[in-house]
Length: 306
Image (cartoon, rainbow, N blue to C red; front, side, top):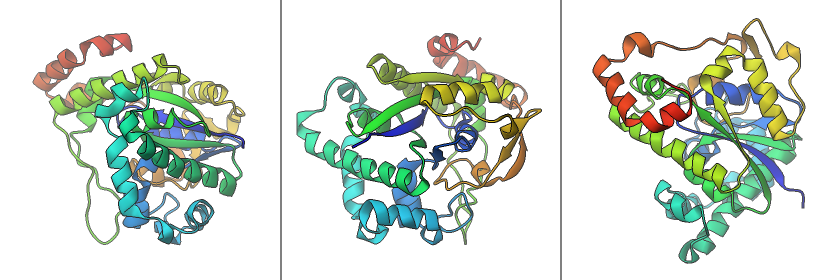
């Protein structure tokens, strides 16, 4: 059985992963499906809108994936999926998962992996693409996936200046995938964002040191030269490089995608200008900027942020 190649976008949210996933999804042989970590709750259970605009259960692509993977989404025991994920997919388990599979949860991890293996294989089969892009970002899921023998896991570790990330998480962002009521993405205070930034990035540093193929992508480099970033990612993922027509003059040409969860820009189609968001310089309170700078100092310097 040929292993499904999974390009996993990891890091803390608001680091450009949604846009990067959209661009990677335009490459030949690549299918980008958003954040699969949220598929079970936001897609299967809540029937939120797919990136194509349709409700999850009305989307022909996801209906075909569910049928191929599980014999239909209705056959999936969501309570069991939640229980297993809660038992093995937690950041506190990362130190142990970095070295071995804990004996007491071995059977649960095997079950969890089997669910994702079936999901990725179905996505690959239905799309006809050998590479699946999962922008879930969570390090805990990546550390679970590294133990699968049926997946060829390759991680794009996405980083961004911690102060810009902190400023972004202070914004009120509506979730357009929820229909019939107003729903918003969470808002985090700067200290919490700084802690999450350190933890997630440190976990991906560890993942790379433990042998999982990993390539770092800095948001600032990405928006400065998106075509070069996508070409480097394509080489890392072992797929064809993008055509020059994918973007020109800093403008990307986005096609509809079947993404589950993520930044609202996953619904945007057509021409999109790619430009750096440096608003934190004028929006983030000086006291908050100093706090985030201090809390994230070691890794911030490691990634080239002064």
